[in-house]
Amino acid sequence: MTTSRETKPRVLLDGLAMVESPRWHDGRLWFPHWGTPEIVAVDLEGNAEVMAKGPSGLGHSIGWLPDGRMLVTGDELTRYEPDGTTVIHADLTHITNAIWSEMTIDGRGNIYVNSIGFDFSEMVERVSDPSKAPTGVIALVTPDGHHARKVADEIAFPNGMVITPDNQTLIVSESFTGALVAFDIAHDGSLSGRRTWADGLGPDGISLDAEGAIWTSTRDNGCVRVAEGGQILDRIQLDRACFATMLGGPDGRTLFVMANEFLGPDKFDEMLAKRSGQVLIADASVPGAGWP
Image (tube, rainbow, N blue to C red):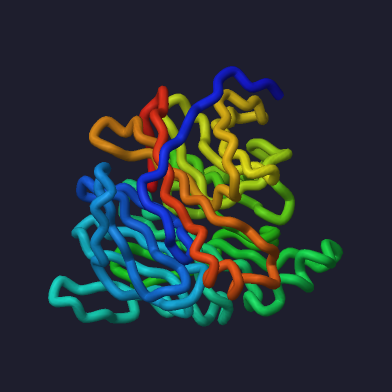
């Protein structure tokens, strides 16, 4: 793999507990402020506002239905109504009782959510014993929430997901293996044709651009733009771990990077107390595409 260009970031927000799962929505970057119940929106000048209350722990993400109502993952898939009330959007307990984490809603309104399949308290044990069978799953939920089914399993810690503009390919981070894994999407939303899209990475939250490349993370505090097959096209070197990326801004050419000092899978409390979370921005040469 070769690196063709180095990109420089700047700080938009800092002093946050832990930042993850960013989404560009309605002219601002939205993200769950992990370790607090806050769902925050920030503009390109760094003006931040708490927009809603969500889970106060770790692992949840956000998305929007075609009608503009927000969904939040966690122990349940929750929908936020226009009057501020919340309801369960879909019952997912028949698939797994573990926390639901990342979510991507495609151009048809289909909701893809994933679960690592175990409790965060088991993280150290899972990381230290790679022989354990992967328990991660992806579920498909219809826009109305009336139907939910498992469409992929045996994923070693599924993380961020993107869907191509034609709604035909889903790519998910498999964090324990360091790979991006692709699936074909059928007309009914089913997933098949599992394959490695790129490996040798440290993928978490990811973002797709109009040339089909993905912004993701590496295990040496890097944030990279990678092509299918693994060629590194651009790189940002950080002083802390890249947890997620999102392309947004008025023209889709602003890269948002969610960065936190990672102290280890057994030290999340210390990480939250340190408040090392930063939202970084950089100029991207290619605009975002697809979903989210």
